[in-house]
Image 1 (tube, rainbow, N blue to C red):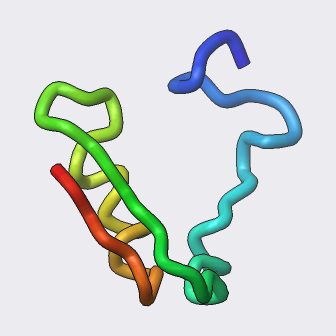
Image 2: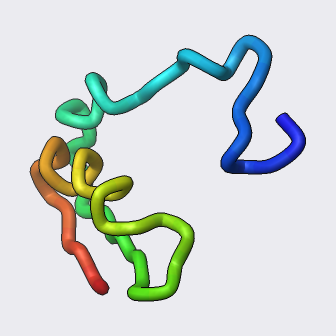
Length: 56
C-alpha cells in the first residue's frame, strides 16, 4: 500500500502470527515508547515466540 500503516492488495489479510510458535532460534523484538509499533502491536509476536527477548 501507500504506507506501512495502510495495507492493501493481496497482503491485506496475510498474517504470520499463527506460525510464530515455529521459530526455534533466539530472536530479538524491539520497540520504543515513541515508536509507531506500540506495545499492543508487538505483544502477539512476543507472546507466541518461545525464544524471544523483548527490549523496550
